Length: 133
Length: 260
Image 1: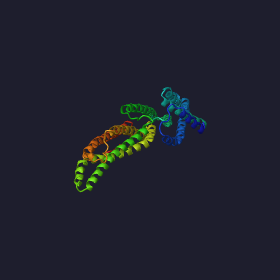
Image 2 (image 1 turned 30 degrees about the vertical axis):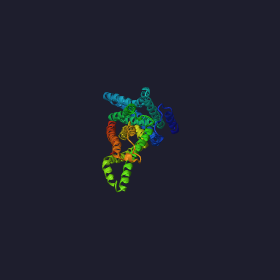
Image 3 (image 1 turned 120 degrees about the vertical axis):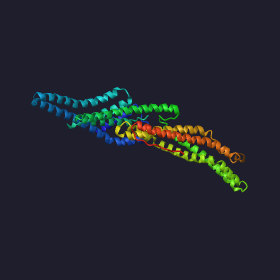
C-alpha cells in the first residue's frame, strides 16, 4: 500500500470516527505534524517484528529438522521442543492481528478507533515485510 | 472530551510500537522482555479507560460546582472568569482611589488636615485589604487568561500522552494541572461573581457619605477579605489535588501559588 493511500485511509477513519474533534485545531495540527515520521517508523518496526517472527520460524524449523535427523533419540526430543518454539515464534503474528479484532469486538468506540488504526499499521507492516522477503 | 481523533492515531501508534518491540523480543527468545512490552501495550488501554473515568468524574464535578469544565465552554468560562477577576480588581482600585482622593482633599485645607490622618488610621486596614485584593485579583485575572490560552494544549497533549507509558510523566502533569486548575479558577470566579453584588461601591463625592467612609470601606473590605482567603484556600487545595492527581497517574507534578 502506498503512503498516500495509507494516509487517505487514516484520514477517512478520522472523519468517520464517532467522537468529533473537540479542542483547538492548533494543538492537533502540532501533533499531526509530529506524527507523520512516527507512522513510518512504527510501520517499519511492525515489519521488523513480523520479519523476526518469520525468519525465526524458518530458522527454528531448520534447526529442529537438523536435530531430528542427526540427533538420535535425544535429538528428536530436542527437535520437538524446537518445533514448539518455532510455532510460538510464528504464532505472535496472528496474535497481533487477533488483538485488534478483540479490541473492535469490545464495542467501546474509543477502543474500536484505536483497533482500526492498529490494524492498518499491522497490515502496512505485513505488506512491507512481504514485499521485501 | 479529552479524546480527539489525533489521540486515536497516537494510541494506535503506541500500541503497535509496544506490540512490535514485544514481538521482536518474543521472536528472539527473550520472553520476559516481551511480556514487559506487551504489558505496556495493555497499559495504554488501561489508561484510556482511566481517561474515560476522569471525563465522567469531571461531568459530576461540573454538576456539583456549576462550573462548565467538561465541554467546549471551558475556554469561554475561563474568559468570563478573567473578566470577573478584573471587575473585582477594579472594585478594589476604586475604593483605593476614593479613600486616597478624600484624604488628599482633606489635607489640602489646613483646618481639615488632621482629619486626613484620622481617616488614614481608620481606613488603614481596609486599604491594606483593598491593596492585597487589587494585586491578587490582577494575578487571578492573568492566571485565568494564561489557562484560557494553554487549556487546549494542556488538555489535548495531556490526554494524548498520558496513556503512553514513555510519555506518561509529561502527559499526566499536563492533564492534572489543566483539569484541577481550570476547575478551580472557574469555581472561584463563580464565588467572586456572587459576592461582588454584596460589596458596596465607593460613594460619590457626597460630604454626607464622607462622614461614614471608614464604615463603608470596612463593609467593602470584609467581603473582599473573605474572597481573598477563599481564593488562597481554593488554590492551595487545587495545588495539592493537582500534585496528588498527577502522582496517581504516575506523572511528575508542579504546583502553582497565586494570591496574597
